[in-house]
Length: 175
Image 1 (cartoon, rainbow, N blue to C red):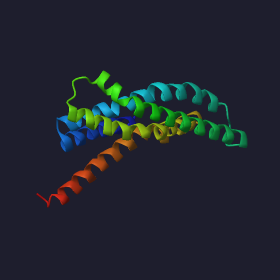
Image 2: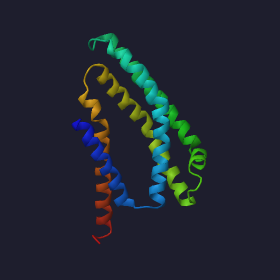
Image 3: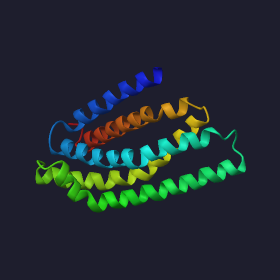
Image 4: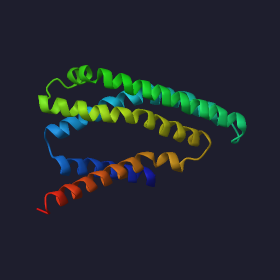
């Protein structure tokens, strides 16, 4: 419960830091379009498949014996390859997807969405591996570490925005 509550609060802090850093406008619109497309595709294609397959598969293994390690390594390599393939597809199809899902974006916002989306797409293999590891830990009965995944991501995001704001303030001469 405590981790879930902290995750909800940190999610609000993430949205608040984004709003305070960029406000409403083309950059914020572009960010939301860019983050939504790879996230939705990753959750739909990679996340659902991993959730359905990994927990039942690894819950039957008692320890980290050689067969378990080999199975995990094979799963990790497969997840990385599929994630990289999905990232390639997203970057190739991103202009069409953005125009289809966000037809009202200005040319500036569309360009930003494409630039952000091409960068965010390459987080798909990393996020899929994090999900794989979280699910394996979950299957092994280690629930605390997987539960802190979203909390950790939100905290890192807020810290990155804060560092960016401090750097922009310093570059502007403190005004």
